[in-house]
Length: 104
Image (cartoon, rainbow, N blue to C red):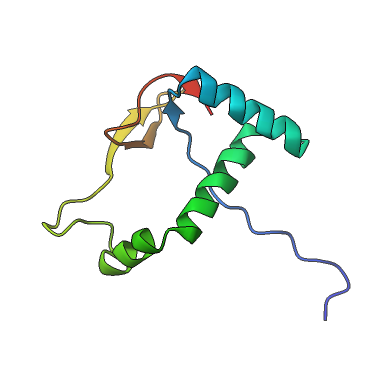
């Protein structure tokens, strides 16, 4: 058994730009304050994880669609390539609901 702890695995992150209604944004910021956290990314990630764990219909749907496609074989999330500030290509998620706006 090692005497020192192994480093925690690094989980890659994606950046999304979304627009949400002002009352919801204020409530989200207040909830982060309630938790004693200034990290909105953590708050949103935990909230989404909670919803995905608890939604039995969604989990059943995931089991039926393990490869990320719908019943017609279409990919549910399209990916597009976009250049970053250095000109290198980045894979960026593109969904119908994602829009330019605040970074969360």
